[in-house]
Structures are given as structure tokens and as C-alpha cells.
Image (cartoon, rainbow, N blue to C red; front, side):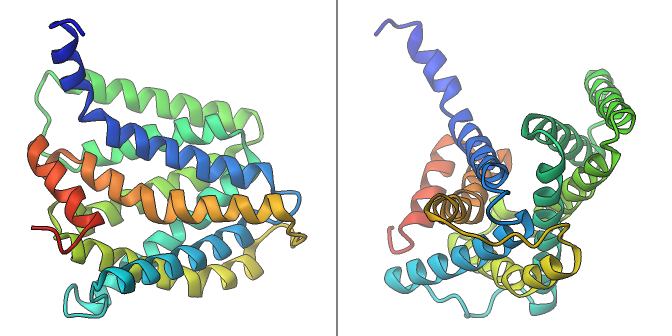
Length: 259
């Protein structure tokens, strides 16, 4: 390996968690879209949230992590769970109405815009990029309305807003690993209770003919979207500190008893 490739790899390494989180996002909603004929998307979301909650509980029991110890206030945790339920419900409905790549592009643009809007970072050098993103998001919205897919764009907008509010509320990159696991468990618990009700009330179809492929898809959604995505995103957050701090952070998430 040449000397020039080493700095390049060192610069790309911090992007690995973010790319991993993006891949988990795509696998989650891509698998939902692929088996929508067998199981309605909102019912998939309800089952995936319940499975993810169970898997996280089993993992913490195995590692000896106390999920119900004193941590974040119950009211704040319940609010985070409601936001998470709204995010998942809207996105599962959106990918049932629109191509995955378009939903992903809309969600990414809208989430980045919302994250940027709340920061005191209105330096002149950043304004053109922010404006460019806003223009692209609005153009996609106009195109969606003209293509009779305005409902999917609005669902993606609500999902992005819920994601950003929840992400800011947790401050997950600054949370201790056990607190981050506890917070995710609260989110999944609330979603496991609310999403079946949301599915019964708002699902446009009640398809529920699960086969092996559909069960595998929902399991991948539970693992990728319910478990891997938030921890990879927390690791990728610049608020987590430098590279060594991020490595120690994710190591403690996987092995809470590690020094």
C-alpha cells in the first residue's frame, strides 16, 4: 500500500459508520417495498419494531445491561417513542407509494435542511449550500405534486421532521452507551404498542400473507432499522468527538463491560 493511500483511508474511515447507517436505511425500506404485496407496510413496521425490541432486550439481558435503571425521564422517553412511531409510520407509507430512491433522496435532503436550520451556522460560506439544498427539496416537492405523488412527499417531510426532532432530543452522540440502549428500548417499546393501532387505523391495505421471504424481510428491518441504524448514526455523529472517542464509544455500546 502506498503512502498516499494511507491518508485517504484515514479520511474515509470516519465515513464508514455513516455509509453503514445509509445502507441499513436502504435495506430496511427496500425490503419493505419488496414484500408489500404479502404484508402491508404498516403491519411490517409493527412486527419489525416488536422484533427489534425483543432482540434488544435479549441482548441487554445477555450483556447484563440494566434497561430499567434511572435515566432519562419517562415523559421525555415516551415523547421520543411517539416521534419514532410517527417517523416509521410515515416512511413505511411513503415507500408504499413512491420509488425508494426518491423517498430516500427526499428524506435525506429534508433531514439535512432541518438539521442545518436549527444550528447557529449561518456563516456566508454555508449559505449557498443550504440554499441549494432547499431549492432541490422544493423542486422535488413540486415534481412529486405534478406526478400525483404529493402525499408521499408530505409523508416524507413529516418523517424527516420527526427524525430530526428525535435526534436532537436524545443527543445520542453524547449519551453513555447504556443510556443510548435504554433510550432505543423506550422508542421501540412505544412503537411496538402504537404501530399496530396505526396500522389498523391508517393502512390502505390489510394484506397479511407472510411467507418465508416476508418474514426474512421483516427480520432484516428489525436488525437494520431497529438496532443497527441508530448506533451507527450515533457513532458517525461529529458530536461524538474524534476518531478514538468514536471507536471507544461504539466498543462500549457493543460491550458495555469493556473498560
